[in-house]
Length: 523
Image (cartoon, rainbow, N blue to C red; front, side, top):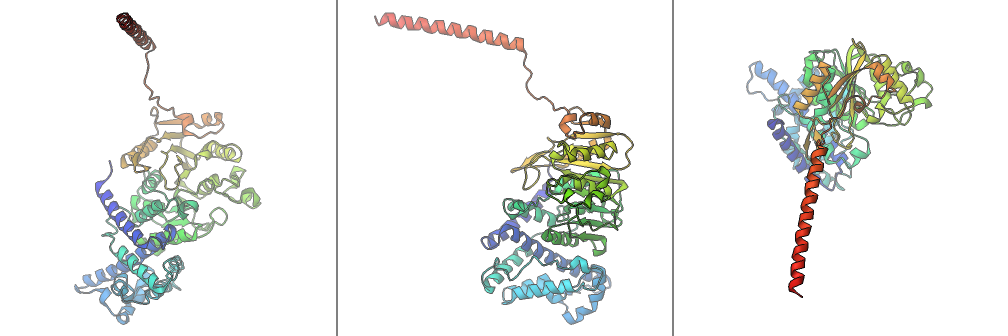
């Protein structure tokens, strides 16, 4: 059963985004449009976030009529140092989204105004602890791009439409909203343009329901953890789902992630701020995780959640240093150069805490292919690191219809066996995609925690049996599919056929008699 309030909020948000898309149609393609909308949404959010924070303090101090947005820039400067230390950034009243919007229609230099404000927000963090979190944050928002229009007037006209559209989004209280407003906007935009640059660029956003499942698997039985990590964090949806499931205070030492795509890396940092994760509680890095991991000083992690890119190319054994890398060397072999999937698995296992859990979305081929991948699976099973394999339904993700799997890793298991769950039917169809409901997620997580056999759905398999099957980890190898075909009683069927033949013979004789009578009359 789908939450009606959540769906109503989602539908309203989608209508607004679609309206903005129509206003900008023909000038900005999907991939760039997504960035423009989300950065403007972020600008609105941090403006309101800072204003509400300052106003709340003044109201508590007794000044009920105080409004930071109406303050002069000169007076507001007194709050700069405190706000940078607290929030990691500072915005002058004249630079707030609401005040820029109120003059946008008459500002002939709106593009320059916005660019100057964005640079000012970034520079407010220079020399402070939050500098790396804000550096280059607005780089993908090019106010002078011809994609917005061939003239300054055209660009500004579209910037006004963009600001009005973002201002019209009914987002309410960000913290109380039952949908992840930013994440849902990102997901919807990815869906709108899945056939464009997003899909061809290999950007597969993790739907919120899949994020929920991954996170609940990795946090099952826990109320708090030390750190959450995603080695291919994209826009940060998985990291933020941990904050939702456990609560921000339930993640004691913060959120860590690495992302190779610079645009998505910027969006991830924006996403952290948008969800009110303080700058000192997250560390998002930009590099190739497999070749240049950035969090050696921060591992191990108690929770690792990830949806790494499927079967991408990497250096593999072309780089002689990698076979000696402590993340990969224990398996004695590297993942194939054309398929980096298990390299991400080995990386996650290496950085997993002894009491931790990693839940990773995997391309199904890694479960049964031979060669180096089989050797890595052998290492994982022989050392009892795989806790569970879950077969998911197909068509869950934007950009691909593949039926993916989830691999759950643990380092200190009490039993030498692996649980296999066939959740391929656990979904409902929504438009052209399948979707996990709350009931589906709860059933899968409950089964994961109980670890008892259930016919046609799950089976706890000894690792010896897996070894006998050449370390094949396909769920279908161990969980029998229910035969839903109708059972036919052959004796009954034969009797029915005999009766039909008898009736046909009688009918044929009757027809012959009628024809004979007609022929006699016509003689």
